[in-house]
Length: 192
Image (cartoon, rainbow, N blue to C red):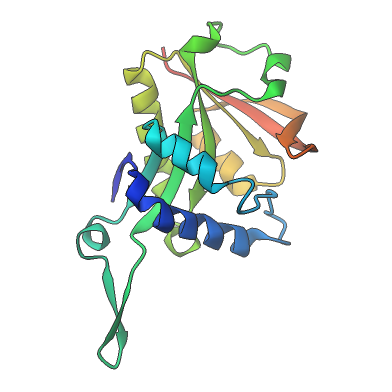
């Protein structure tokens, strides 16, 4: 597995991966209200890719070949995208309610957004690899803090973030976009 910045050319595969995630979690206890077209949107992912802020995890072998045998001599293009996230400096409007452990200027903070792992790739360490790469990139950028928010019902994500070294600052009612509010954990990784 390789985690790297994504190119604009990879957006169809990345969007297909997010669609699979949305389809898999809708109306389940892990539903985090993502909706293709608004969160994430093509424009959001395009901007992130254009700015070098879209990270993608790909299977090294699938990335090279990108074709799968589907039987009877037929092939189809395999989606090499295992996971993705956006890493930028955009903090949620509610991030100001926390007395963060890392006291620094907003310009010294990166935020992890839309971390998602393809349903077909779960249990392979993809999320952890993406977080490791995001933290390394944030440090290369001179950031002191890596922050995120995650819904309180997303126990697997909360456990992953804690195991990767994020401090959980508790659950708050957070504005998550589109006029929606949800109880969410606000978390931070000290990069100093």
